[in-house]
Image (cartoon, rainbow, N blue to C red; front, top):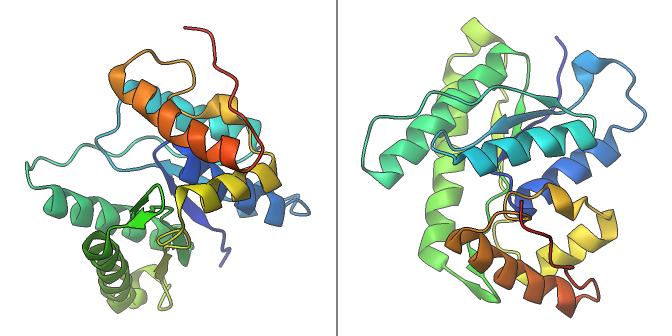
Length: 204
């Protein structure tokens, strides 16, 4: 059975770093069926975020899956678990045994220990749940990785610079919303700290 990584992406900088790292590791892979796959995640993404996921996949020569149907619940934890289960079962059915969930539980240099613990526990438990159904999907070793969970903004920016990621593909690059402005301020400071100043984009 073919295996390839699935990256859960919200179109932000950590997701872009994960996609760029996966693309670099698979440079020698010529079979499209074995190239990394990107899934818009979570299901409740904005239009800007969904477009960013598509842009990143196209620029990095990765396969992009369509967005999942939004989860009908107002509870953040429940929605996260349902989305993670859906994505992981879909990956296992496609012969993918590794799901990369590039969340960071930090803001600046401060880590939210409780949030980090919840993310790590959910990733472990959902991976085990999916593995229980290996007789149906054939992936007993299904796992969910969280490689950037405890990295600071500066450390993520350093990885982005090392990989020379296409910054213009992040969801907040040309958006003029308040959330986008706050994201530019956050990541702009981190990128400047590693010697890669963010050039302000023109409005789109």
